[in-house]
Image (cartoon, rainbow, N blue to C red):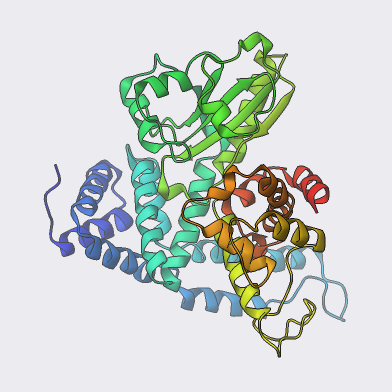
Length: 432
């Protein structure tokens, strides 16, 4: 149980945790700070983190003075006069080395000391993860430059401390402690686990679950992945979740990764998933030589929102008389573009007559996808007409739609970073 503490008391304990040099009392000070931090309200946590970011940043006056000194040095052998002797060159280089060393030290913010000390403190790594989760929550509300720099620095530190060499790959089974299994149920983010029977199925025959554990956070996987061993690559996730009884493992030829979940919000942006997938593939290959295909079954969470927005805007633009019908004209904020191919339009308009109407094919498609009862899903003819444009547009959404140079869809971005470019390109060519 944590009792509310005065903000100034917690601030003082944070200052002591950074400035104290007596190692014999440091553990006690770090305990006081972490317990005090947890006792603060959200508003006071934000106030404390903003103070940490600003008041314990690097000393830019010192950095600037050192840079001026550095720029004032003359490079060895840079003079037009007679070449310098070895002793003179050594003296000149010594000055460079000294200022470079001082610069490296000056470029480290004071809050690095706090992070380093907490990392080696019992429970400190978990605390740092919670600290960063709070920072990310604040930044989601307001982009504070100093706090953004603090987050970037802490993220770099966590990435180093959580390198694959420090992590243990653990196969999670029904025989693991109940406390660990409870965390799997609580943190499953893709396909929620409905009950203990569901959990036991996911950990039983024909299934695998692997997690990364860190010795500083015992009994709690930082990230875990669920795998289905099947005869063939499943076309839908329902085949995986409802496969009962599962295929005999000796007949399996495919390993399908159908869910990956992080348990620590504060580790956002630290790509543990990439390393976990590679480690699991290596392990499965070694233990099950009959497995030759590795694939993922992943949701595409932003596709429908993107498509409906595109259809709505293009349908409205198509009604304007003064719109220049050219995708090349991007001088305005929007331009008209028929996102459906002519043959797709004809097939859609022909198959949708009894279900909906519209001024153009894009309005018809929008009306179908937003209809409350989805009666059109029972029409084989309409499903056949919809599949080509929806698949083609999905490939476009995954491969071509970007935000800051990355895939617009977060799940797609994750898989593209993990080597899925070639497969997605083939999909785009197939349906495009």
